[in-house]
Length: 241
Image 1 (cartoon, rainbow, N blue to C red):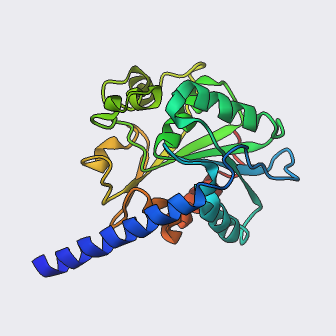
Image 2: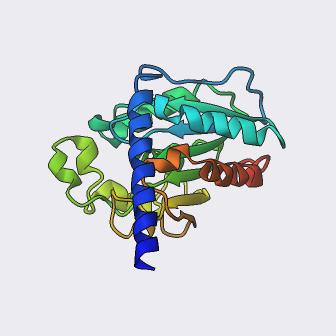
């Protein structure tokens, strides 16, 4: 048993190293702009993807492609991706998301999905913007419980991800602008090395899906994770806000 567990741990670690390298290679793409779909009509579903800290919208390119392949079998699901300044704090990140989705039709249905810090950005926007187009939020490896020591990074984005962050507290309590309930799914990496006890960092009151044997970065490049995300989107497609 111990040998099998060691083999599994090594495989997971190797997968995470490969994912991190892929993450680094993709960061040069889509850094300066939002990537928005063409031909979106009122009533269409759009999955808006946000990256995590120290990244760009380029890292979600493979996930966007996977969503497009899988969702095509059922209904048309558009994808968008937004780059934001992760070191400047959550406020500027939310503003960047708001500016991007403003270009989408007023009758579109938005499914906001963020990796790591991006999940907090998505949830903040859903709670506080009053945007009735937001159908749901989905997070990938997002530490809603905070990251110990994050405040030591010395910039606003780090301080706001610390366990004592008032912003994270507000998000966990679901304190929104208009009292509107927005469903949430936390997709959790069972082997996440960024936070201890990753399951404890899922958003309270939301649905949770644990992906065993995956690390923090690997969530972005895993077909099974993409499948969970697509099924969730299809479950809520056409329901409106």
